[in-house]
Image (cartoon, rainbow, N blue to C red; front, side, top):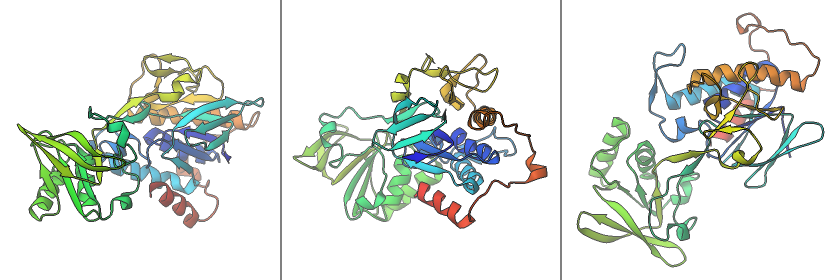
Length: 350
């Protein structure tokens, strides 16, 4: 049983900033996220996309913003349960909650903050016959451990940053990497596209465009993919097939927690603290809705700040908190050594 003060569901920018704001109040946080690394869609979908509306940053890459948020919060030693989805919630007699993931990991906290962005992300699966039969038997929709592809023949499908970046990365690990995209043009960052084409010229990546994977081959395990390019159709030997077509946001199991839902978002009271209809459960960031709601990262930061103030009162009933400015008081919430904090962050980001 993992115990904490605030259990945060969602490791996107709002969830990560909550760690910092809670830390200023001497509150410990633990974060659950279905993705294998922190950052939410910023890290998974567009890490190299520039963001222009973060105060103090005329321009910042999404991946760099995630890195900075992790650096900002690591002094408060947050815990992470990554690669697991929050599945069920149970409210105890004392008002606290037990949240259990799809892998059975249990978390206990007096306050739950849902910061799931647009919801939990489900992979967009290509319409290939029998693809489900090969899941975890050669087919994967995200890469959690690149080492498992060492010395193997890997086929990646997709045209965005994830497909490009993983093709580049695995080119140094796998025996053979083939990138297949249905168009000649890619949607990813220009430098990644140029790197892929450079690796193709060096013979480190096979690039097949315009083409699509239309079938899979194998008995117990995947051993090949069927590729269609124009009128031509051929079998390509493969130990692994990784279609990277992005992620589809859904509320997932949270939709069944008894929360008031409106248009796939969680209704909150924005006149006070972004609490839901269940006392002790808050929703902040893109996952919530209220009159005048704007789905912006900076709005999520504001909501996280006010939510932490309310959480402090729940965890410390009757205790008055005096607001201090960091320019005056500094950051004095760090307990333990910096080395231990850095170790926790390294474990979270792999």
